[in-house]
Length: 266
View 1 (tube, rainbow, N blue to C red):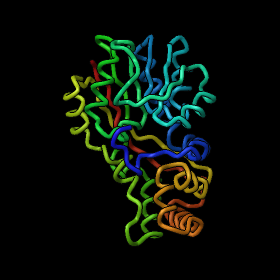
View 2: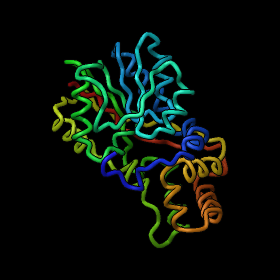
View 3: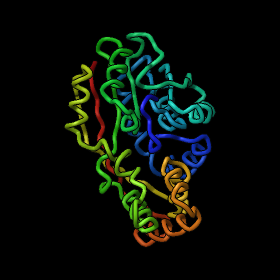
View 4: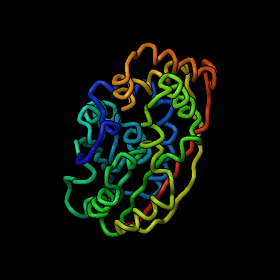
């Protein structure tokens, strides 16, 4: 992806940890919500962007079994793993800003927690508009501010304790860096979309172990590179787990997570 920086890169070794530790806790609850919303629109041809390891893809195929789903991700390692997790979809590596699909080929484009990774969102949204048929919809979610996500508040506190000077800022600036609904709506409008609906959704994440959750964040997201660049990985992991456990308990732990869901018409 043109202009991508280190905070947005996913190494080949990360998808496994992401799938094992983060998907069940963080992403599956919202995938079930988004899949139900998508199925209610009765689409025929669906394009999924930033599909990751396929948690939303598999829910879409279950919620709307007659739908043709094309799942894409920028990262080839995600595509490889995702295709084994949701083999009912057609999987392709693709850049959201340069989609390899003809005009008007889809009724619905869906994206779960991916739009914040697009370097130029208006450009990506314009590409999404291009591949939608007339009257097609774009359905996606984006995280609310960091303070609305209890797991990641605890994680960031642990990182700041481990690195009092120059702590990694991936979570506040990237996953939670596109958290103003007015800015999102303006970007959609600039790309030719009309916002039909915007909702704030809070769901509960349930982690068996705070230590496993910390491991997922530290090894299954781009914060891994930032930690490795700064020094002693095992000591950092121990500090982060200690801080997260002090705030959340050792587990099992349940905590709220808030996102915004947008539905826009082409």
